Structure formats: C-alpha cells, structure tokens
Length: 233
Image (cartoon, rainbow, N blue to C red; front, side, top):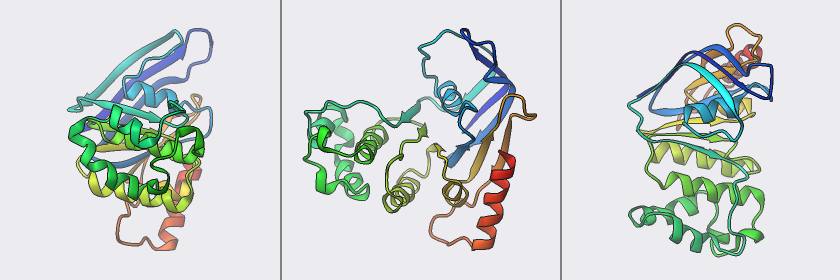
C-alpha cells in the first residue's frame, strides 16, 4: 500500500503563485503517519489532492499521482456541519451502516463521548463535535484516511487516547495525520512528511517518527526528532 506523487504542480487559477511546483512524495502504508508544515504551505490542498476530493475553485494540476492499491481514500476535517437538533446517537443510527453499528459503543467510550451520547449537537463543544465526526468517518469502508486537524479542540488526554485506539483497531489501514503538535507527531507517527514553502527545494522532506504504541520513547530521542522536524520545516 502506498501513495506517491511525481513532479506534482498545482495552482488555483485566480492566483498567480503556485501552491506546489515539481513536488515529489512517496509514503508507504499501512500505519499512522503525519503531514506537518507551517500555515500556508498547502497541507489541506495536498490532502484533498491525495484523497481525490473536489475543489470549489478552478485550478490547474499536472504530474503523476499513484495511490495503490488504495480503493477508497477518505478525507476527514474539523468543523464539518451537523444537524444541530439531532443527538449523536440518532445521527449515528441514520448515517452509519448497520454492519458497523456494533462498533459504535466501543468508539464512543474510547473517544470520551459516552456522557454526551444523547446530547444534541448544538449542546456540544467543538472538540466533542470533532470527535463525533471522526467516529462517523472511521465507521465507513476505507483504505486510507487523512485526518486534517480532525482532533482540533480536543484535550490532550482524549486526543492521545484516540490516536492509540485508532492504531490498535485499524492496524491494516493507512492514516495521514495533519497536526501542528510537533511532540505528538514525533512520538506517535511513523513516517512524517514535512511540507515547506513552494520556493524551498525540495518542497517536501520525509522524516522518521517513533511510531510509539506501548513502549515509551526516551526523552532525549524524542527531543532530537522534534528538533529535526522543526529544522526541516
């Protein structure tokens, strides 16, 4: 399982500047990986290209993109809209296929939503809505999923528990986690793609994270990786 880009060039037609120019990228799966970079480097644009999402603005794109043997890439992002009058339970019963409903309770508990499972969406915090949205995506048929700030506004304790649970129950699927938390991606992610400004060469650098699960990472090794990530970006 892998995703790959060769000489990817992309820009929105209403803008003169390119977002990507001759960008090359290769990441193998399965596993929990990361996409990191400063604001404005095109992380969400890159995520949409990799997951075959449509753009609302006219654009031009060239280069080779290979996603193999991934049949169903998926793109999850924060601040998606929900029917405010529905409860989480009612919404899940409507949108999640019956074959996946048996897994709902496990994820609701693990994601820390059990106390608000029967609350309406307009009663939830943004972090609670983001967790519910991620469950909604996870309980679908997919091979690769990009989590674009999907855990934004979620407290650290719940966020880390969610990451570990995803790694545990989906070992054969591929995840690309977009986050600004350097420590988090260095600690929990395997391959880390550093996306840089279009004027930098190369525009993307691939580093190795610690891919931690049950074994702790020594602090000095973690700090060394974090420095590598910061310097590369």
